Image (cartoon, rainbow, N blue to C red):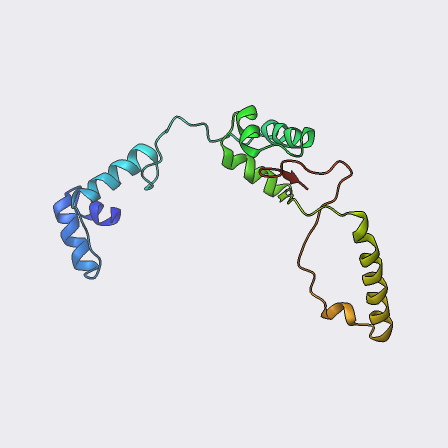
Length: 167
């Protein structure tokens, strides 16, 4: 398009005619597009438009910011990412990207039924049965599907609604 504008000596109407003649299947929506592209190239050195200064600093993710985010998560593994975002004064998406890039991901702890003393005997019985099955058929464990993950602590878990631990 810019080449056609140059061939037409800056005449956008003639540039559009030349362009349509050379590329009949392409659609040109506005003849002023040729002039805008030329002006953009002269002013910015690029054909890319819309890259004006939006007021936001594009270097938000500095080494210091990354370290502050990681330190915030190290100090409290149950911290909410929005709290880290507010504390470090960066967008929430930056916090998530840093955590993902560092291999950290949230693990949502789920409340499970507590074990009572009556549960221990059936558990031991199941373990013995499972070992017998393994002795009879060495690949028995391959055919078993374990579906639940459980977290047990000495203190118990009281409120797990928004509890995410970063590992």
